[in-house]
Structures are given as structure tokens and as C-alpha cells.
Amino acid sequence: MSNSSSVTEFLLAFAETRQLQLLHFLLFLGIYLAALLANGLIITAIACHHRLHTPMDFFLFNLSLLNLASISTTVPTSMANSLMDTTTISYSGCAAQVFLVSFLFGGEISLLTVMAYDRYVAICRPLHYGTLLGGSRACVQMAAAAWGSGFLNALLHTANTFSVPLCQSNAVGQFFCEIPHILKLSCSHSHLREVGVVVVSACLFFECFMFIVLSYVQIFTVVLRIPSEQGRHKAFSMCLPHLAVFALFVSTAMCAYLKSPSLSSPSLDLVVAVVYAVVPPAVNPLIYSLRNKELRDALRKVIA
Image (cartoon, rainbow, N blue to C red):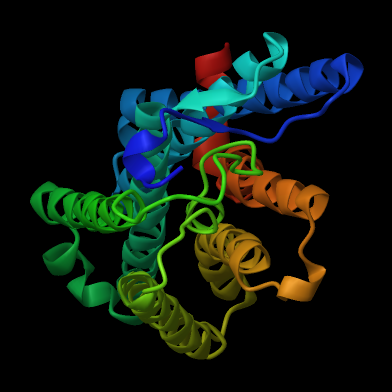
């Protein structure tokens, strides 16, 4: 292949035997249905119960939407390919996956940053909470900024990824179109543009990471000064679910993109991709519902 225009489809990585393909289908089906049910219940509970119409619950509503969209971008295609014993995805379908994955993951880290700010204001500046986050307009603007940052991130990565010439192969070596695996197919000798995009994304991610870390340093400093044990417990209950979701997101992403090349192998890359792309959308609702009594009560009413 002389350039990317000659590529009409990509080959994804799947199990070679029919038994493993069916096992892969059943495993992904179970995870996908669990993610649909859990996130769908949270979205319904927050939308239908006025007691959950708070800024943090509004951001949780948006996070559940992101989780649903992200797992729906990769898993159904993978399940369909396993069921139909095929490994191909069209060029346009691969480009759409790259755009949506970049969009949704970029939006998620931005939204987690916004949620950290919400917790910081609620605990460290409670008297200003009504002014800064009490209005629905401010929450909508912050959520829109998170979604918008994800959109710009996706445009940047998609344009960069599919503008480089491809000549190595059309085998992605992953169960979805992942940017690092596509760039490995490039025959371009100039990687300056690719490095520039990676640096920009890394800087944005680092800024979000540092903002969240510094926010929680100040939050825990204030919480530890609360004289009553009940007050400290309530404050920790407000923060721990968000902190756990953030830790899960960061740890899985770091395993995927910062692991040593010497540890890389096709099977390990597949496992790591499943861990960071499939597991968090299914686990996040469980993390939030375990520590939020009002959310649990609302979920019981929805189920009943």
C-alpha cells in the first residue's frame, strides 16, 4: 500500500478459533448489557427524581452518557465481528471509531476535572457554592466545555492519524481502531506532527490531572480539620466515588499508553485495551451508587 488512500478496510485482532470467538462474544455481551443497565438506571434516576437535580448529579448524568457512548463505540462492532467470524472494519468505520473514542475519552477527563472543581467548591468554599455552581446555567456551560474539549481533541487526533501515509499493513492488531496501532502502519519518516499532537494531548491531560490532584490536596486538608467524625465521614462520602472513578480512569489509561515497549505483546495489548476501554463504563455506576444513599434510593424506585 503506497498511501492511506489505497486502504479500504482494516483488519482487527480476534481469536482464531470459533470457540474463543463465541467466548469473546458472550463476555463482551455480558459486560455491555451490565454497562447499559447500570448507566441507564443512573440516567433515568437522575432525570426523574428532583432530589438528584444537584450540580454533582448533573455532572454524573453527563458522565453516564459518556460511559454509554464510549462502550457503544467499540464493543458492539467487536461482538458483531466475533459472531459473524470476520475481522474487517471499513476505512470510514475505523475513522469514525477513532474520532468517537478520542471525543469521549477527552470529554471524560475534562468532565472529571469539572467534577473535582464541584467537590472543591462544595467543601472548601461552601459559602460561594450557590454563586459559582448553584445555577443551572453555570453547570450547563461547564458540561458543554467538557464535551467541547473532547470534540476538539477528537478533531485533532483524527485529522492527524488519517493524514499520514500507510504502507506497512492494514492489520490494526486490536479489537477496535486504536490510534497507536494505526500509526504503527505509517511509512512516513517525519514524525514531528505526530509528536506534536501527542505532546499537546499529554499537556492537556497533565493539566487536568494536576488540577484534580491539587483540588483533592486542598479538600483533604479541609476535611481533616473538621472536628466531628460525622462531618468528616459525610465529606469523604461526597469525594470518594469521584476519586475512585478518576483513579480507575488514570490507572487504566497509564497501563495502556505508558507501559514499557519491552512488555508489549499482542495478547497483553488486547487485555490492557479491554481493561481501559470496556471495564470503566461498567464499573463507574457501581462505584457511585455504593457511596450515595439518595442515588441508591432513587435507583430502587426506578427498579420498583
